[in-house]
Image (tube, rainbow, N blue to C red; front, side, top):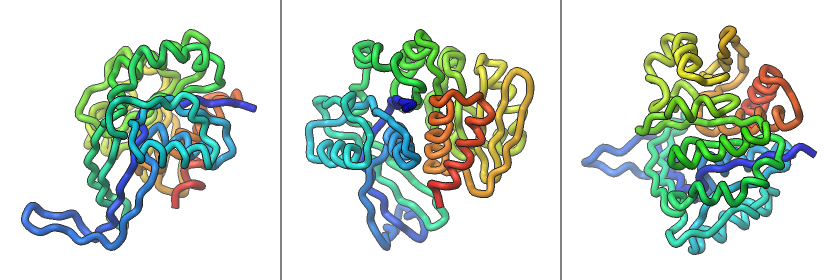
Length: 280
């Protein structure tokens, strides 16, 4: 069976469901509160189990009760946690205010995630090179994400680099080491200008290819755009692909396709189907 390894952040998410976002003067009252396993890498690993993929997560948690809750939840749904290590810090937390339309305001406490290091990856190099596809996120330090891509590249393992909204820029070297880079037009800050991504997506993608990316996928509300040095192709989607959850589900499907030996475009098609299947 094809195997996937994903590395990046894992957090415990506290999600408050609200009608609107609070002003500085008036607190917003939440109608409900959910507690869930989160972080982009953990989300992708969980989505892979939902499509019956075999996946392990390489990440850091703390030594608190949140760490136990997260690892137990991952194990229960079938995510391999043999590479989830404890760090001398509280487990990462995300505080999320979410409206009914899916729009979010997020505050992140990185916590134990900041202990994910190049040494962690070097110690797991053999395991990384033994799988069939590797997912990496831009959540950790750039050197950490780069090392994961480099190790996978040494074994000719296909890689997917997922970018989420961030204030920190993504280096050309990081882009060049990924088989494919994935982002959405709502979560691309730090990689693309969101306004340009929405108004001129093809041009934005070509700019990333010119920076050294082998292939880039931009997800929108209605389609996936795949850019390579040859052209920009479009895959229509019956459902939204631009939310964080949809992006992570898309990446899970794409990783599974690549792990099973699919070429890039069929893997993108699988990603679109998975994104629509797993996200309402």
